[in-house]
Image (cartoon, rainbow over all chains, first blue to last red; front, side, top):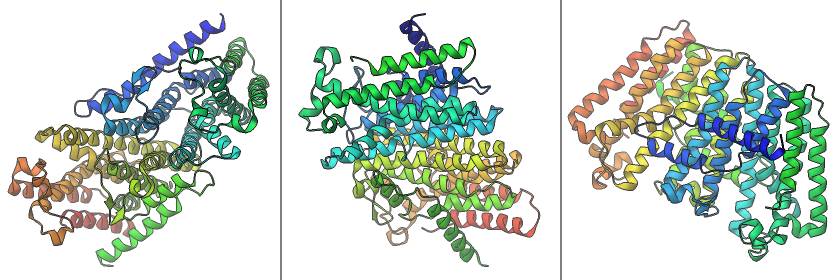
Length: 302
Length: 302
């Protein structure tokens, strides 16, 4: 099967899993549940759940990855809902649709984000009650929680928000911190969960490094595209960072070094995954897909 | 020891435990961590952790209740931080101190709330990795998550926010739903965690009922005080619900029936806890304290 077909199939599968874990309707609090569903189903590449499932297939484990895939997408979605709020990025459109606070009001968007974050843990913990290998399950949940919190995604958002609000110019180290936490942390968790469920701590460490590389490469590419792409290719105005006086990592590295660094990191991420030994056609196939996925993600034109 | 002394001692102990679980400082994201700490240490009765510890003592369990106490207070605090936001209740003072968004800005308050909610799970999951009885630990975490989410606290907040925003007049059933979820749910979780850690499902069911009674009684008392207390006793303007045209449960029951219902529920909560058999002086003492605590909570003048 060609890569694009396989990707489409995997995204579709992830979509089904995510939908299946959405919270059941309820009478009195239907609005917050509707707002949560609206936010999750507003679209998206489902990149993190797709990565999770591929890694899980690479390692195999009796424990199901599905609740983690759903939880990860809920956490990713809650972060977008809160990020879009007027007091944060104040975005009114996401993927061509009104953002949650535009659709449901600001208070309900706060609650929907809270509801999603909490429901991610409800989902995993409900599944954990039935898990056979509770240690492995707890290890994976704990890792996901860490990467989503103040020593992960929320930590990265903190510095990003502060820089924006106070007009602070971030240092190279600080920008790298934001990329590492705001972007790389959830990718790392997506790559690591499957390895933890299979109790392969060594592989998890390799995947953590790969997730770091992937996250930084991904973000570097965003910055490069913002400078070099045409508005038509990107689907949004280019050069917006420069116009907004926003320093990016590229401002420090220069465009040529940034491109080289982006290529080096993407290559390293693919190599790291390649270095993990797996046996059997199915596992080999999942590994090959994951490597192609990373290549495609970091070589994108839009 | 007289009740007030024991309560003071237990609150002090809870304070120490909560402080001990606050997140470690960090360089780049120190602001969100400061805001979280500010919010948690802004005071409060520490009622939920104190209840948790007393129930835990009633049942005994190898698994430590301390991480649950800290997590519960983080969850309670995050809900206050988000509730105080301008788009929600728009409160500028809490316990005489500037609310988190007044002190740290609105965006940082959103993040601090998110950080606290997530850190509650980080805290419990980190402890779960070392727990001997992982099943019991997972059961307790799962219960807490459920009571904090859309089928618990967030669900109650949803209807409360909608009524406020859209000026909808809630029905008796809807008000009861708000009380049950916004107020009772976390009290139920506080009462049930210790029983789950000790794998006593029967007692947990009794305590769930007691928590429901306590939550409704607590809220009824608030409404009654708002009508009958003097401003001096209450420390805030009385009659505010009526002036704000806010329907309370008392509006439906009438003040006399409300008082009787409040007494009935408090009495039932105490009786339910009394009905749980425990043996040994220490456990008996914890049970006695818990019964007194509930009596004191539901008989308060302020």
